[in-house]
Image (cartoon, rainbow, N blue to C red; front, top):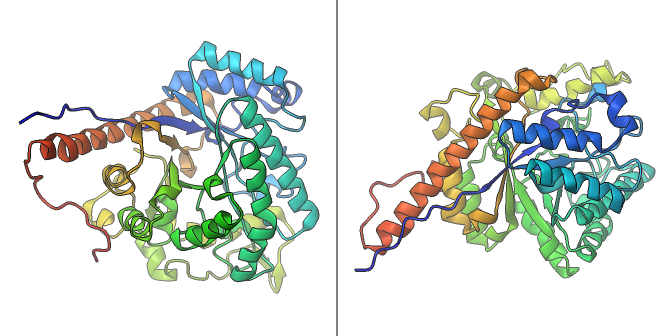
Length: 413
């Protein structure tokens, strides 16, 4: 019997530059916008990341959300106050060549369906700048949110998606780009009691939205940048989520991964339930929302009473937490991606996203070993999953040898 060679295929490691927002001090980067990208590329080389996911955002002087109201502040590492020119792209490309660090994609996380027309227009115009920068930098994808109009119910938001978001996808198609949606429900985006403020939060909505995209010829532009932390937040487990997509014929939707965990507080679940309402958060002033941005950040207690984000490798886990879907089983996550989705692992990006609050240190020297350790953990977990998949599904199967045991199963309760 001919043998199948052992040939594990690992994913491509990257890190979101929002992990360290102020690597380059504001006074320097505002005067020299591309310095922040150059210094992040050098920092990525130092911590052992072969790629970066380059974060873009409205400049703090232009944002409609005050910094004090953001629990997880965004980063305008890529400064697009001025149009990103070919000259600027050449400077960044030179830095990429000199450091040997590549680009996985560009990221701009904002509410693209925000109710106020002028704010929505500004965000869409900025997204087009991100699209243009992605083309000049030679990447084929942009990562972001869909968002939600907080003044409308869900079905009305789906109609708004067709009217407002599909034109963005047509612009992406014209540039040869894919838009990868991260599924965070963004409960803290509003002082209202709404929980799901990004309508593309789970497989059901993904499929409904993709069908709309297909009708408009932009189905190939709409993909998902899956983040397991948000599945855990909503009581889902990765393997079942992947299996549901496969059973529905939509496994192809997932085209990239954020590597960020969620550690659920069992006491918080007992108090409020998953997605339950919270009271007396501090974002309201008696009968109306507080006008103070520093109070509005308390809207995020809809989420933080239940859980805390995990930087991969920093949390102690136990088997019961895995079984209850209260933390990410990283090894099975990487195995399920290969076993269920049928993706091309060697051409799929695995992007570390750092949002563990107590380790979000805005000091490069202190943060470097933390990120280096998390990246090493992520690489090792993916290498282990790649080895297991190649051994079990290729080498053993090729010789007719059965795999031992059962492993985690989708939809098992």
